[in-house]
Length: 396
Image (cartoon, rainbow, N blue to C red; front, side):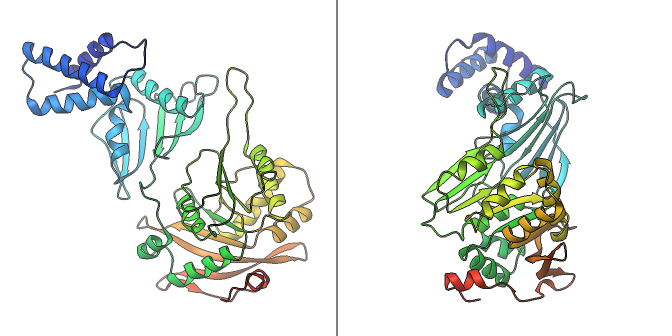
């Protein structure tokens, strides 16, 4: 079986399908079976090839074409489509080129439109970059003409089918039992935390694992660009997702809009999936107005770098004196957790840092746990501010 055989069969299938109405999976499969039966009378097709053709023809109509089997493969964590002819995947931490490709540029464009349409997003020449998600929560980024020069670019980051728990992270060596128990007590006592790290360091995974320590009787609101956090065990859970403006004139709903709205929804805690810009100011105001214990993530190269990143992001949203911004950060954020990706591609907690306050124009920080070569994650200092633990009746 070759690409040309598949292309001809798919074209024949599309001509036979009644696309004027919503077809069921069963109807499509019946039409495929009939087509293969007819073709089998004219040209011999081996049984093994028929089975493969049946699945791939169905995927090309209903699913994500050649990408569907990759999306369903739990060992594949990243799918990178560099135009219709070139697909790379990350499997078990290793990058490799995949042997399959799309039959045409148009088919790849159809898949992209199918994905973004389900998320009420738009991608076209006027808006050539879009973030979206798949039904299973996988994160999607698409870039099309005129920005993408070698064909439509599609990147899918697939998350595990079953969310990774803190116990699993301990088992993988990403964090020690001692540090995990320490963070559990801080979450219970409503210490506000920002989780930082580079791309692919596991910020979202760690945030989801950490959220399992939130008491089950609290009201939790999650705010994300693309809803991918899977919070388990919280019954009073509200999930909010930002929305882009569309061609019909509907306005955008930003992370800032959602944070402001969430404050009127009586949350015990707010989780902001990722802070990238001016919404940092709204998040800090939430932390400083009675919403302690909230969690968020942001890109940063170290715990110290996180502070300057927060300052920059606040300035993207509002003009304030640097001292005022630093006071807001120092009073709102209690703990910084920094993650990193090691040379062996494993993800680890590299630092847990306490924000100790504002003094002499600077935010004072104190590393509590640090990753040391040959020793792992080592406790370097005791927690300085114990007030919230004492109020909650929790002992370290």
